[in-house]
Image (tube, rainbow, N blue to C red; front, top):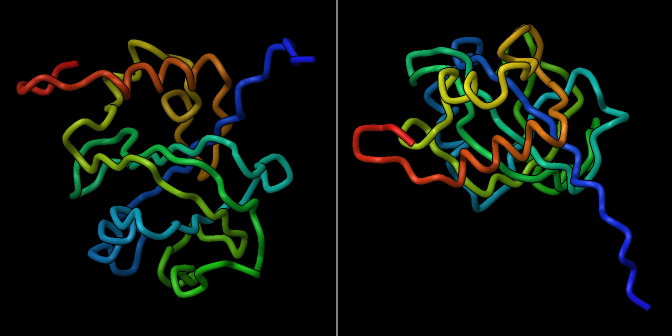
Length: 167
């Protein structure tokens, strides 16, 4: 007998990063853009809530690389941990990540990265999810995203950008 019970949408979390806090920010872009391997992101809070299969969103703070906004979407493939990483060579040390670093790392497989073209900027998001925590209170590294907010982000992310940058 088929189970017709509606499934809850996966939980979503956003990791914010501030490129200027990285000791060598030139290594940051290739690290994020290399989708052949997972990234390991500091997770100083919410370790007990993040689960394998949760949706992951990567938010870039304003930097020399471009404006603030969502630059990548993916999925948590391993819950926050202190060790036992599948690709330990990709785990950055506290010195690499700077002041916001944590020994807790979450393994994330990014499925789509848009460093600038196609990213979702603050302006894009203010129209669809004005209560998104990072828009209202940008201090911190990890934020929960509720199911409705994530659906809105996903819809906007899926829309192709025009040549002039509008969606």
